Amino acid sequence: MTGRRRLGIFGGTFDPIHIGHLDVAEAALRALALDAVLLMPANVPPHRPTPRASAPHRFAMCALAIAGRERLALLDLEMLSSETSFTSTSLDRLAAHGLDTRRLFVVAGGDAFREIETWKDVPALLDRCHFAVVSRPGSPASSLRTALPDLSRRMVDASPAVQPEGPPRIVLVEAPTAPVSSTEVRRRLASGEGVSGLVPDAVAQYIAKHRLYGEKGSAILGLEPSANRRST
Image (cartoon, rainbow, N blue to C red):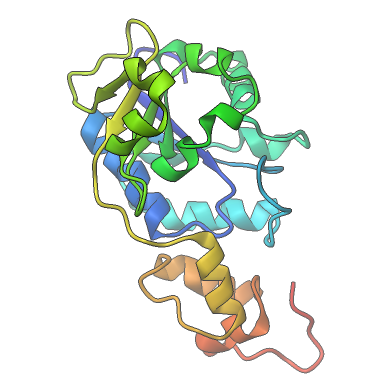
């Protein structure tokens, strides 16, 4: 992970990963001409209830979701720790593996970044890396200048010309991203509704095979539960 590459890091619960997550990652890739965005699924996520799917299942779904997508890759650093995956501790782990976090773009959706002032180790966190904040439905990146006025002086519009060198910045990426949430995907699966177009097909098949979010979700794809098998 060392070197002068332009890298983005995208952490999250991914319970499950969906099309909106992939849109965010690829929007950051394009807008900043990154060499790669590295997805880091959290074992123990902050600011969230206990995930419905186990960490290994969520990691596997991420691997399936990015298969064949250029410049998207997967890191297992958070899978190896039982500690809460705060962004600041993730940066510590990346630094320990030789990454210069001052050159790093931490990718986040506009909805999540609106809560940045509640994140652990803020404001010091904002001085450790750059942030690439991508629009989400109802939370356009441009709205952050008024939503977070105390941070507006750090904000710049996204461009491949934005360089990692220099003071940490909050780079605003205006791009359409699918109106999907993991909460909605789980709800639809639990109630037996379809999730076509909300998650990659390979992820939908994995969910059904392992019955991750309820037996009705398995039945949607023709994987009827057996009489003596419990849902995971």
